[in-house]
Image (cartoon, rainbow, N blue to C red; front, side, top):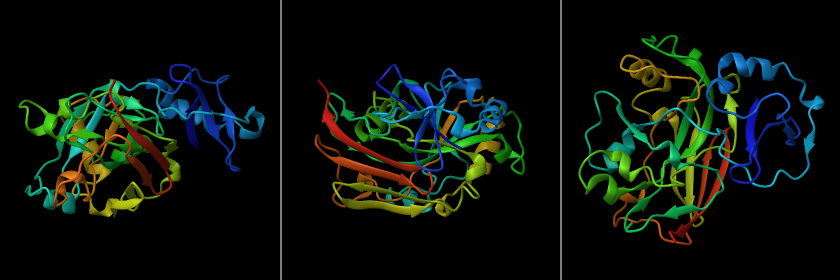
Length: 281
């Protein structure tokens, strides 16, 4: 299934994309997509619904983030070999885990707001993983069975906030609109191999990131298993699994976001995002 949320900010409705690409209204069956509503059990109930029985949404309008809210918005740093190399960092021996504020969550085509005092805004196409059942001390062999689905994420970052202001990375990752997510939550059964997906990002019509998930240092299964040794992963948690090479930080000379820039963000089979950057009020 391809699940999505449509409508104005704060008034989104849950929907399903049918085989003809039409949006079908799911609001009679689920209040919204968040937490237990995207558990494996909840998704099985939605899977049993005939899409043809659902009302067609002729003009869905704005597409919101594919999840209404998330318990945790986790990220994995330096998880592509070529990206680690372009930043001059040694490949990590264990996954680097950090968080984005959940308030960064935004729609896939919403404007990205460059915050006040930002001088080094950056882009990061990422494969997003949504957890579908509580995961604690999970083996790598079983890890993918805990996945509800996958989505496109742009882990927008402010590098000076992240690396030059002390403390943790979270403050460079968490401004409002720094977490475009979607357009769809694609259920795990539709993704044969999460380590064989093309990922790309275009900036102002130029392809700056062009890779695939086989370049990950730690696979999705390794990440889930590893994280579950230290914390309880919950239904609706998102994990952004890292970005490939081609970020502005790694360019020579470095290149950073300015108002009016346009980003097109893609993960194979999971849809496309389009964002324009604007200055904060």
